[in-house]
Amino acid sequence: MTQNRLCLLVVLIATLLSSDCCSVAKESPPNIVVILSDDQGWADIGYNNPAVYSPNLDRLAETGLTFKSHYVMPQCTPTRVALMTGRYPSRFGGSAMSASNDLAFPLGTPTLASMLRKSGYETYLTGKWHLGSAFKHGPNHQGFDHSYGSIAGACGMYDHRYRTGKWYETWHRDHKLIEGSENGIHATDLVTAEAIRVIEADRDKPFFLYVAFHSVHTPLDERGTFVDRPTQLDPQNSDRWLDEDKIQWFNDPDGKIQSESDPEKRLLLASVNHLDDAVGKIVAALDKTGKRDNTLILFSSDNGPQGSWPGNAYPDDLKLTNFNQPHRWRGKKVDVWEGGIHVPGFANWQGKIDPGETDEMVHIIDWFPTLAGLVKSQTPENLDGTDISSLLFKKETLPPRDLYWSWHPSFNRWAVRFEDWKLVKYGQGQPARGDWQLFDLSKDPGEKADIASEHPDMVSSLHEKFLQQRSKDSKTKAKTKQGGKGMGKGKGKSKRKAESTK
Image 1 (tube, helix red, strand yellow):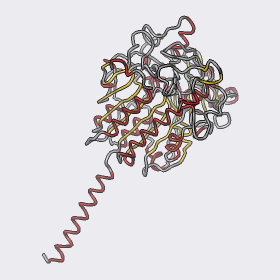
Image 2 (image 1 turned 60 degrees about the vertical axis):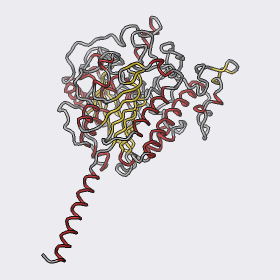
Image 3 (image 1 turned 120 degrees about the horizontal axis):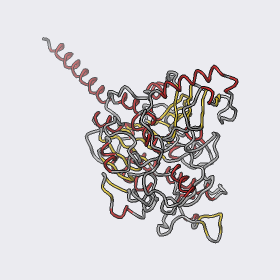
């Protein structure tokens, strides 16, 4: 072999090796950060409502793909079931169907965390679990390597305790209660600090980080540096919170929060500001560690706005009335009207997802199959979600499909959407063909005019889709009791109301 040919061969081999290396690097699996806020309605975020100060969330949305038709389930536990399993909660029935401290789905069910762990990821949860409040049903038994936060649902923002009773002590690390519950630091700050620790750690594997914030769920408590006393109205001025002019979260450079005259709405805006600051710190940690460019960030709220709250269910729990921002949809949390299930959502991955908006219907059940496809993992055959990676990375149109909602163990709220048409039925008992209300969301996004009598063929068509979905649901007799024993401090109607919306 001549020297020239030998040199050419060396160059060719080097080129091939370089190409292979680039290919491996290009296909290296991304870190995945899923951020779930709590009870943040469609209008409780800046990019949907200019009255809200949330610059970090807005920036992520603007530099990512924003889902204008993003759906979840009507309440916290059901949405977490849908996120973790890629399946509608009704496939499991019972405790999966509404807020509950019981086991939501059987141990051994494939979860987003277990799928990613099998695909070589380190898996972390920081924040709220609420899919089974006994440690034997906790996140470390459902695919997470490590977990931190509240094993139960909401909690006092500064003492981190749940409702008095069986699950009162809930603040844990890896299923071991933390002595003193880290009292005196806002839950949002603790959850954020844990997320940053995960991001900053050195590791050889990619990580999956599920950040399940407690905000902006009640109890709303933004006392700032005044940690020795809970948020309370100023006794000298009932339109102001005590020392709110000195608390960071009630004040923003644009003056948006202070321009809100209703003190309860202003408290919600302060909570959004605090949440947004936390998200900004998480993104800053990704930037600082050089991990941002290889990290996919997904964001959603778990359901629509809470609206009003009787208080007295958690430590330092205020009674609040109509404290969310007004929105265009009908209904709120626990509703299958748009207001309960149509929430903010977006995907952000620098250099991989082009900025923009999409009107395509996206549901949180889609995140499991989409992430499974991204990491080249085999997916269970019974998933209800759709792999939306072609939408994320190529802006392609998704195939037509119907979406399905039901709520409560006794199944008393139902909805089906296909394209712009939506069926809704309230009241116990499986809907018959003539029970439905019909809405054309393209003309009536507020679901004000029932046009079922004008479009009987469309009602029949969507009813058939409903029956197909319903046939896949759990046949197990549902439990109608919620929450578990010893929940809540109130009595009678106020206690039942508090438990039904937690």
